[in-house]
Length: 245
Image 1 (spheres, rainbow, N blue to C red):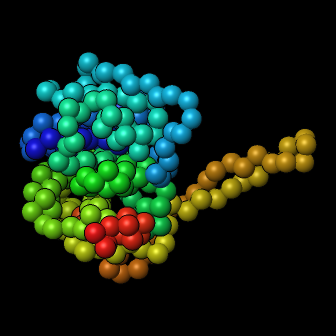
Image 2 (cartoon, one colour):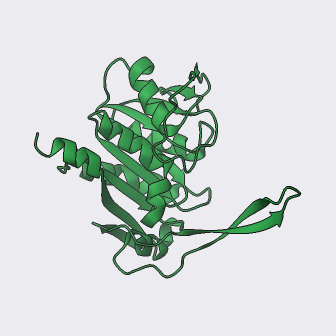
């Protein structure tokens, strides 16, 4: 297979190297990632000005051609298709994101946005995330079999697979929950602490808490119980445009 790997945490993210290593088991891999941290970009793209594309000669995964883009995760998919890959890839993998993409947080996710950009170009996309931390042992051990299984399953051209790994040690993993529906809650609850400014405005300092009581059967509930959550995310726009076709 020809596989494009992208992310939203940037070229230096250890999760990107993790996903590239896993992808390399399935075929030839290209990495095209943002030059900077681009979390919560959703499906944003650059409309005006220009983008810079640079090779990364010291990417930590052997045999992988890597590039940075001075844009968003979705820009990375566009730039890869326009200038990097010799042909359209068979698969676009986005991640491994630092932090869950579950529940309503899916709406903000640059990781999911990049996978959706793959769909917009008629490509198969998957988003992969893990709880905050630097332990990728569960991902590296279990993701290859999950990818192999999902690649053999049919999926609509307006859907992507969304895979979330719990932030736990391998011995604490309880299994896989498939068909998880997105929670109706946000995992990351934002709060704003205002400080008055001289002109009557305010500076809003961001703080937050994490949801701990999600609905049973949801993606958020699965990862908080140390299960791998596997589900689908669909684009209503792509479904409406392609359903009749």
